[in-house]
Structure formats: C-alpha cells, structure tokens
Image 1 (cartoon, one colour):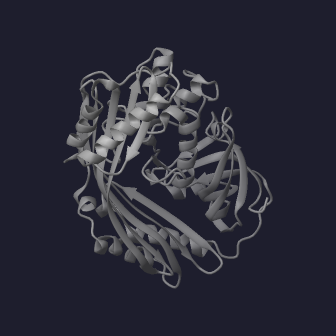
Image 2 (cartoon, helix red, strand yellow):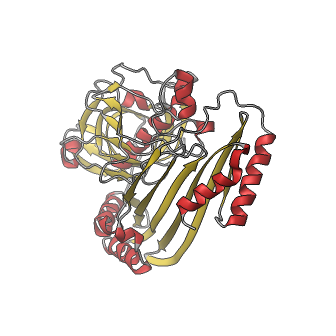
Image 3 (cartoon, rainbow, N blue to C red):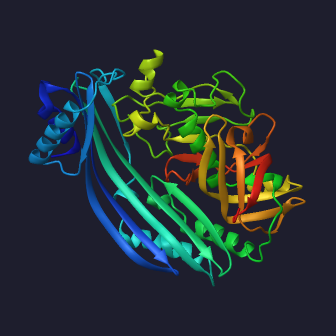
Length: 442
C-alpha cells in the first residue's frame, strides 16, 4: 500500500460515521553523529506516520499511528471515533476542506533520496578536516519521504520531499564555534565551508572577555536572524494569536524597517517545500512583511472561518492548539557582504547564534536568551576579540523596527531557528541597537 492508498483507505474506514481527513507519510530518515572528530553513531529507519482527524457532529478528535496495514488503519479509525464521542462539541469546527485537488509535486532531490552512510560521512569528513588541531562534534542527517492527503469530501493530493543538514561545532579547549547548513539536496551541503566557518569562530573565540551590558550595534548571523523570524512567525503572524489579541500584528502599518521583507514561500526552487497543508489546502507564496509594512497573517480553516477569510494553507498537526504556522519563511536578502556589515560597525557585537530563547511578552515580542558559539567584539569595522556569552532581553519587533536595520546581508541560506532545521532562510543583518542585559550567568 502506498501513502495515497493508505490515506484514502483509512478515510473510507470511517465511512459515513464522521467527517474525516488523513495524512499518511512514508519516509526514511538517517543520522550520522560525530564527536571528538570521529563518527560514533550511524542510524537509519524507515517510518510510517498516519494522522487521522474525525468530526462527528462537531465532536473532533485526532489520532496518530505508525502502521498502514488494513488492520492497523481499522483500529486507528475506531480509536478516532471513540475519542471523538467523548469530546465536547467544538462550535468553531470549520469542517473538512471541500472536494478538489490538494496539489502535488516533487520537492525531493536524488542525492538525499539515495543518501548513503558513506555520503554523509564524506560531508562530516570535510567538516572535521576544516578544523585542523581542533575537536569537532555534530551531526549530518537526511530525510526523504512521500506524503499523501485524503478527506471524506474526496479531496486528495500527494508529494515527495527531502531535507539534509550538517550541523556542528569545532572546539579549541576553551572556545567553540558553530556552523549549520540545510538543503533539500545532500549534495548541496558543503561540509568544508561549514567546518571552516565553525573553526574560524572557534579560533577567534579564544581569550574571551566580559563585556559590560548595554545597548550595542550588532551584526547577527543567519542563525540569529532565523530565531527572530520564527518567533515573529509563531507568536505574531499566527491567525490564532491575532484573533486572541496576543499578536503585535497591525495590518497595513509600517511596523518594520523598509529594508525588511518577509515572505512564506513553500514553492521556491530552493525550498524544502510542500504543496498543501495538514488540512489539504493548497500552499502559495504569501508576503507577510513588504518593505517594512505588515501585510498578512497566516490562517488555517479554523482561524480563517472566525474572521470570514480563506485559509492561507498554514495548518499543521498542532494548529488547533497553537494556531497556524508559516513553515517556509524567507527573510529577503540585501546586497551587503558579511565583511561590509562588520565594516559598518564602529563599536558593537557580532552574534553567530542565539540559544535558549524564551518569550516574555508575545504582544511586544520581548524575548530573552543567550548568545552562543561565536560572540565577538567589533571595533572600527573589524572583529577585535571574543566576548563571553551574553544574555539579551529584546523586543524582536523593535529590533527590526523602522530606522534600526542598518544593512541586510547577501548571504541568504537555511539557518537553524531553535524550532528545527528547514523552516527559515535568512541573511545576516546589521542592527543599530540591541539590548544586552547581562552575562551568561545572569
């Protein structure tokens, strides 16, 4: 049974007893871990994921399983109906999507689909070799899959996808530097380049000194910008948060600097893409911020129904609890090189990565977190030394606000966002002000 047959089959098993929608994914994920510059773990598994959501008279339940044979699907269908019968009526239930074609496409790359342990080991070897005399640690993984959707109105679709990531650090004994790359193609990962960046950050990180907290100019690398973007996404452009009055979003207002444009682009040729969401609604490029002006929020069928709008195709498995989410975010790049960004700073801080970020106020997007694996002093346009990790407490909306974005880098790439790889592509940014509130101990 393939994913299309399994999705259709489990919906048929529910029959006319309830509305039903199902997503079935068959895939293979493999992971190569390394530490002390040696590979110590290489694992792989084939997986089956079945998510079935049913609604009987507004009583809604979602269940998941990991087998797609007839007997397992039948049990899943009965379980879903049993759970739904115990639920209170959900008066906001929008119903499953109408009949139609959800979409299809091939977003996979052969180098990831056919990935081998030797292929991932080659990326790791290049990463390790780039840091001569240092100890490296991290992982290289690959994931390829086929997913299919079906619902009781006859809506259906399917697609193939893939993702590969190299993520690691080099360590000197007293300092560490990190680097990250993600692509739909394993062959596109440049282990040597990632390793060289991590090694350079580690070497520069020696003899770090404490910096007095305060407001500083900053150059943020793509990982740090990706963290900002995913927080704006999850807590701000989220139709549920907007509807509950917990979002900063004001459509039509110049809430960001004119240099900032943010889109959700699942169909771009470089994207780890998907043609439809968890409700079978087709995805399309959506501009969230256009030259600093907030232009849109994302909806699933539930949040769209509450405001009389159409779903934008941003439902995910947990969106009924957390709201819809843009999962293909792109912060549009500029024309400045990273050296140009640094050259424009008289006295400030370069930040490679944020860590352990937590939101303090969703409405104002005030977030606290730490810098990690590459925090450097910039003086007179050059990096002059390493700084011990700093704690920041900063409104992310204000950080990208009008007049505060001095320049946008040309180094657009996938960056780890703390929510996982493959969600955000971002460039480096130079900001005129960032609020550091203490050291890592504070």
